Image (cartoon, rainbow, N blue to C red; front, side):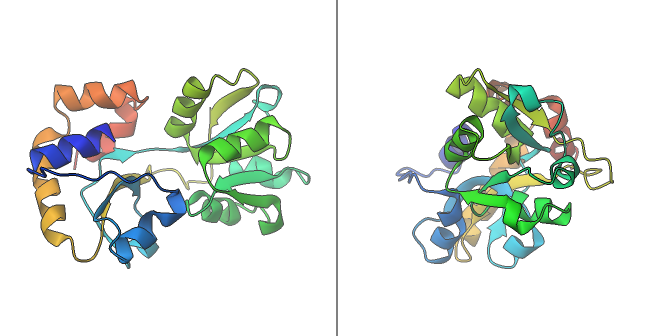
Length: 216
């Protein structure tokens, strides 16, 4: 949100109406014109057929929220797939469901929930064994939530799937080309600047999470 606010200010957007919504509604809202731009989401080929993206603003590995007692047990999608009774929560509409399926987690052991809070609560309450999102997002969520029984672990899959960290970018509706171009221009002057790095550090983004997009 901080990054979005800075970009919209930089392009001269005088009146910005911020809308709180579920992750699953982000792209439908762009397509039917309820909003013109979203906070950054993962860039995928499937999404790019429907919407437009800015240049990338971060890169982030996946990770899991697990109970502290399971921190060494569920360290990858493959580990979850190999445990016959393990159930994984994902946020509805996020790419982690497809990643889990691709790693061999059966669809009947994946539960979709509306948001990160619901997914983490399901882990805490023993409904599922892990919840998947970005590693950075999980760490930030647990710092805010103060759940002592839960920890965040980074996906340690070693099958080559993570050689290139997935990128995230602002998303735009198909009729917002002018806004997208203006935001891209503003980003070219902002990404990597000390103020940008300081803002991202507050939210847990390490130099590793940013280096891939700053080198582009």
